[in-house]
Every structure is written in structure tokens, then in C-alpha cells.
Image 1 (cartoon, rainbow, N blue to C red):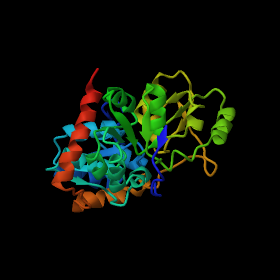
Image 2 (image 1 turned 135 degrees about the horizontal axis):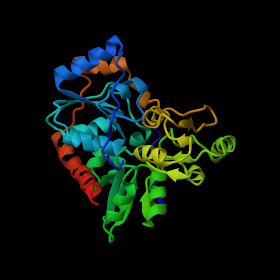
Image 3 (image 1 turned 180 degrees about the vertical axis):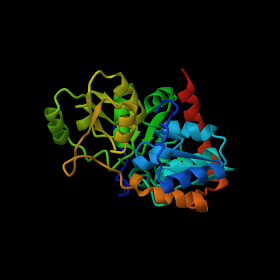
Image 4 (image 1 turned 60 degrees about the vertical axis):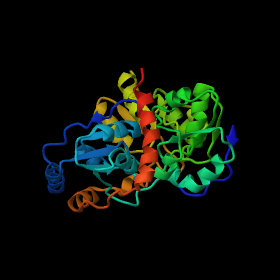
Length: 333
């Protein structure tokens, strides 16, 4: 495995599942949001890591791949993206003529920050044979420099489809990239970036929770370190965590991913108990960026249609190609 020199300091494979119908007794703010949605002909897309009250109002809740697929096919005139900045950018790239708003413009991502486009471009220039596979957790400018995108749900399939004669460069998540190499046997140069949330779990903390709940399987996201992945019964994307939990006969399951996922899992599998994998500092682990979006900010962004995602035509044109390649490969049997 080859590593890129120090990155700058920072931060699935199905269509998303329509969120369960929100409770009948909505609070006043939630009712106003739903009224605005109808008035604007808007769709509310929410990532699995969003706060529960946003998930409950969303039209679709899912992982990055599912949300990309939904953004590509929506007929809505306004896309309200409850996630982080790179996700809303992806929706805008796929819908250049539609309004895309994000509740909090500062909702970023440590992975996105770890891979600045100029630094990636300079490294690509060192090897003309590089075929760049970018994890979707990156900026629009990095997408525009890439050959194809992937998500945690389809990364293995994307790498398997990559040209055999090319040298693969995987950016920006070194842990996901390492896991994909384990699954495919394809050597890749890995960018040195990571999700600050998923590297908080350690071999010691996971061992302790497994000892505490010996009958509970552990499901971990591939952004976790190898020390954690080795202890997991299943390593998969958030969408596949839902599938695993539905199929598993276990009544209790330990989950090693961002804590917002537990709300989705509890709704999809109400008869099971989900145990958040602890870190050294807390009994769960939350992304400060994902949690920047609130119901109040959701209402404000819809009422004002701000903050909007704006990108240059050139960046959108170039970034659209690797996204479309990803969607095409994902759709293959």
C-alpha cells in the first residue's frame, strides 16, 4: 500500500427507503415545514446521520448512494438536502437547473477537508497512469478531477470495474480504501484522509462492548480502522446495516457508525435493541457537522431558499461524468 504525503489537517447500494410516515401529532414547526414543502414543490432528502426530527419529516432517508440516486431522478423543483455540504453539491451537479438548499452552509466533512483539489491535482501529475476513484465524501472540485466516484455501499463494485491496466488512486478515505483492497485484491494508492468520527473507535473500546454483550453481533462501517473492522461480524454501508439487522436473528446488535443511524434502525427494526459502540470518551459517537442541521434551520432555508448551493458550469460538467459512471456501474446486475 502506498500513502500520499501528509494530508492537510481537518475532518448503499439500493434506492433509499421512503421514510416512515411522520407522527400524526406534529408540532407547529414541523407542520409549517410540510406546508412549505408543498408550496415550493420541494423534496426533503435526509442522510441517515441526521437528527431524528429531520429524518421523520424527510421524503427519503438513506445513505450517500441512495440519496444520489434519488437526487438524479426527482421531479421536484427545489431539493432540500439535509446532510453535509458535499452531498448537497452532488444533488446540484445532477440538477444544475434546480434550486438546492442546505440548512447550514457550514455543515462540512473532515474527509472533504483532507483532500484539497489543488493538492490532488499535483499528485495526479506524478503518474499519468493514475485512474482516480473518489469516495463521494469530497468536494465538487475533487469530483471534477476524478474518473469515477464510489460510496461505501458500492466501492467494491466500482473498484472491480476499474480498468485493469491503470494504477488506481483512491481518495480521500484511507480506511475505506484499505477495506476495499482487502475485498478485491486490487492494489491502490491511498490518500491519507479519514472520517474523524469513525476513527474514534478503538480495538480496546470495541472489545469491551463485545465482552459486555457477548451475544450481540457487531456491525461496523468500513470507514472504521482495521483494528475495529477485524472485530466486526459485518462491515458494510449504513444502508446495508438495515438489511443485516432485518435478516439477523439476533435481538441485540452493536452498531459502530455515527449515532444518527440508530434512529433509522429502531424504526426499521422495532423489535430489536441497537447498542451504540462506545469510544473512550462517550457511549456513542456523533458527527458535529451532521448535527449542525436543525428543524429551525430546515424551516429557514426553505422559507428563504438560502443558503443555496452554487457551482460553476465547468465544475458541474466535469463532476457529472464520474457521478454518472458510478450510477451506471451501480445499476449493473
